Image 1 (tube, rainbow, N blue to C red):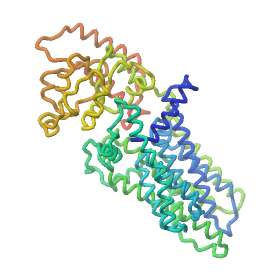
Image 2 (tube, rainbow, N blue to C red; image 1 turned 30 degrees about the horizontal axis):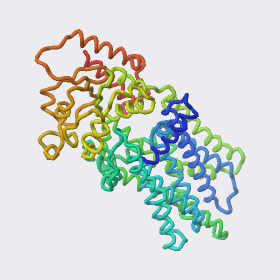
Image 3 (cartoon, helix red, strand yellow; image 1 turned 90 degrees about the vertical axis):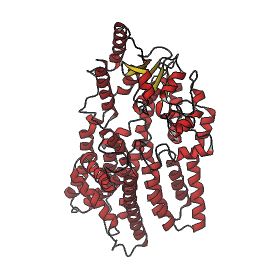
Image 4 (cartoon, rainbow, N blue to C red; image 1 turned 180 degrees about the vertical axis):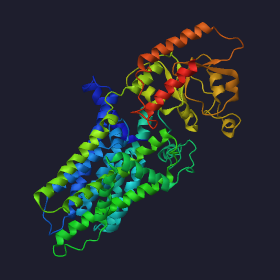
Amino acid sequence: GYPLFTIIVYFITSLGKHYLQNLSPAYLVNASSCLFGSIASGLVAATVYEISTNLRLEDEKDQPIVRQSSSIAAGLMCAFSPLLWQYNTSAEVFAIHNLFVASIVFALTKYNQQKHSLRVLVIGAYLCGLSLTNQHTAILLVVPVAAWVLFSSTIERKKLIVISFVSFVAGIICYVSLPIFETMYPHAGSWGNVKTMRGFIHHFLRKDYGTLQLWSGGGDNTTEDMITRTLSWVADFAMHQLCHPALMLFLVLGCTRVCSPNKRNKRNVNSRKNVHSGIATGRVIIASLIFYLAAFHSFSNLPLSNSLLFGVHQRFWMHPNILCFILVGVGFDTAARAMPATAAARLMPIIIMVAIPLVTCTLNFEASDQSENQVFRGYASSILETLPPQSLLLINYDMTFTSVRYMQECEGLRDDVQTINLSMMTYPWFKEKQHLHQGLQFPGSHYTKGNTVAWLNGGFTFAEFLDANPDHNIYIAGRLSHEDPAYVEQYEEKPHGLVRHITRRSSSIGPVEEYRNSSLHAWQTVTKHLSPNNLPPETKYPESTWEWTVKKEFVDHLVSRS
């Protein structure tokens, strides 16, 4: 349910088909993420500049070069931090989310400068609503910012509420596109049934995963509590996102500056207002940071002991990281202002602030450079090209389904192969999708475990699905969602490249030479795209990455063939 991201991707790829045919859809969307991430980093710099300008005391000499250096340093550090770099070059919702976080905070800065401005109020409320159509965790920024606006605004209360509500709804109304597109362009690979109000609310609240949860895989949050998860974030930010842990001192310095009571600027009213504006913005940022870390880490249920799931959890730390980079920038400015007034003393912090992001870029470039990364193209191609014509491929792994679906839908590779996500088959709403899978028979509403209430109420087992489609050439990638004794008794799986071929069990052993030749041909096709010589290196792709999982799957299937 990411309607805004889906719409943006649709327009970008549509423009690419007409004007940039030589570039793949993946490249175009990745490039758009780079654009969104770059703008977000620019807004981080602009926010630091605004806060630093507002915090300047009336008896303090104006030093725009210091503010500019600290602002640019904060923006570039944000851009070059490994986590943001990774997702600002990927076709994911997170680059746009980062842009919304930076935009809302920048709008907050302008609001604190002009609390009477209806234009700033309308833009801010609209951004808050629109941000929720891209990534739901934006609510953890919207809530504290909205609370501050309602508390502090000088606009008449009734007028404030009405204008804010209408503007917010104008942004979040983008969600209406989901049932419209589902009706106009029904697609077998789309998640959920949003054509009914009940199905729409179910989808909006992410009930298939669990509302306010990241994972439906049984995580009960017993291994790591909120404090443990927050400390993991602190360690990651200090040790990996900053080029040196000592830079945490600037974060502390930035927080201290906006939290310290202002005892100067008593004479000039405008100067007092500016300082109060900067302090207010900084304090709301700190409150938003604390609120996010406490709320997100209280609800998150991904087990961090699993390296891959840790990587999934980690990407939700970009939101608090952006807030921290703003405070680090304020800390830079504070430290530079404390230097003696000599030219040499003023020049030194500027040089340091320019050097820090350059060092950050240099240290992270090799690991973050994905210009040659073709792993998932090769992975999906090595699966699809091994399958006989008109095959049915059942997939129960996100990495496999998304990469295969991309190659089929966006690049037209092997669109004769029909693919079904087994996870989607397990939800009751799947019965509304069955008619989109032409030529297949479904012996019930959805795939479930045998001898259960869901099965008695019209569900079907995996074995029953196979029995209903005896004439299809069926392959599977991943594991079954439910135990199925009948399937184990009646069917067997034969390794076939990176997937497995499902056939009925037979009392007699089939021709060994025939299987050997079929398997050899499949692996010859696989190794055209993936081979031990070009698999992702573990030094660049650790266990927390999907690329590492591709390598593991390659090795596992190679072993299973033997």
